Image (cartoon, rainbow, N blue to C red; front, side, top):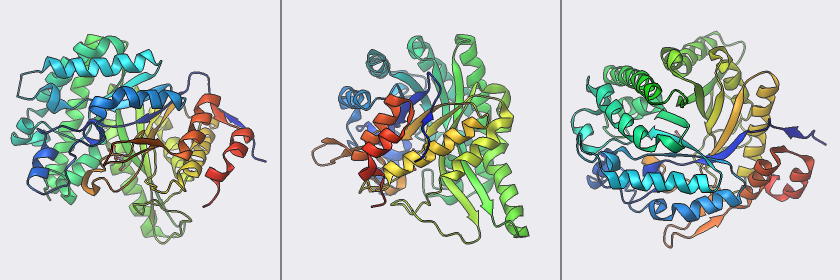
Amino acid sequence: MEKDIKFPEGFFWGSATSSYQVEGGINDNDWAQAAKEGLVPDTGRACDHFNRYKEDFDIAKSLGQNAHRFSLEWARIEPEEGKFDESAIKHYRNVITELKSHNIEPFVTLWHFTLPHWFDKKGGFTNSNAPEIFSRYCAYAVKKLGKDVKFWITINEPIIYAKNGYVKGNWPPFRHNLVAAIGVINHLVESHNLVYQEMKRINREFQIGIAKNNMDFDSAKFSVLGRAIQSVGNFFWNHYLLRRISKHQDFIGLNFYFHKYFGYKFYEQKSDLGWPVYPPAIYHVLKELKKYRKPIYVTENGIADSADKKRGRYIKEYLEWVHRAMEDGIDVRGYFYWSLLDNFEWAHGFGPRFGLVEINYQTLGRRIRPSAYFYRDVCLENGITSGIIEKHKSVLADR
Ligand code: BGC
């Protein structure tokens, strides 16, 4: 019998989404533009979360969640340069009010990968004025919405954005240029630091961070080359940017998905996207964040699993390793499963299914997956107990 584990009082239990991936009806950002040109799949009406957010938050509440991470769509709020749309703000204010009425704490991401078309035409984050342009938008949104929001994430996964948009070239703006990628990272760092300072001027109580995709770089102990690649990868991918923003963050948001093993490793399980499932990896990455001496929120962690055969065990085991890191002194204060809903998975389109809730894209019907009830009981119990494991054993079994 495994021992029961308990999380601290006040731990945030939630799930995450992002605007372009769930809202639908966004026609004027770089992704929508690229979709019109047939370069990436089209998000169309997505989950129609823009109109159905109340229903979706009712579900989140029924699943025991006390926090929710979502993003604002910059292109809705500032559809033309310097011209702000009050109706978009009104919408997000309603979204926040709805969450609050359920006692769900909002964690708001200001920017999650998509650029207004006008900003994209100006070169996006390659533009040397990008930090000022971005911070003007952020200051506007934060002043309008800040009354009811304490936790803010300025930027989602800056390194992933630079890699896919500017090196791999499978996301807008489809570049293959390492120099441009480095320029983008620099501008994102400057943008974050500037926005942080402006936001603190607006309200010192705001808690502000970045959602950073860190990976567990690993290799066989005896492989000298593997160890060398591992430490270079670890420094540039995981720590370079965090160091540069270290004076301008109140917490670290960790988006965790990947164990990067240099050499051969057999994985018992993989997701529908072929991503290895290796729960101890999150423990290693959390331990490495200790040196920043900041609270940590796991702002994303999840699996594409359309049959819902692996998700329950995935959540259980990653959480057990998060808890183990906490026992070792790591200050983790919340966990957000990615994602509340199945959604638009960028270049992969609607194929991968990450949701606690299944979306039928024809009818837009919502169906709560069995693994979500396991997670619900963990959220409500603030821990993983033998009783919960017993109750959900069919969901947790290897199937
Ligand atoms: C992103 C999400 C994405 C998820 C799964 C993260 O990189 O923030 O937008 O859907 O991972 O790939």
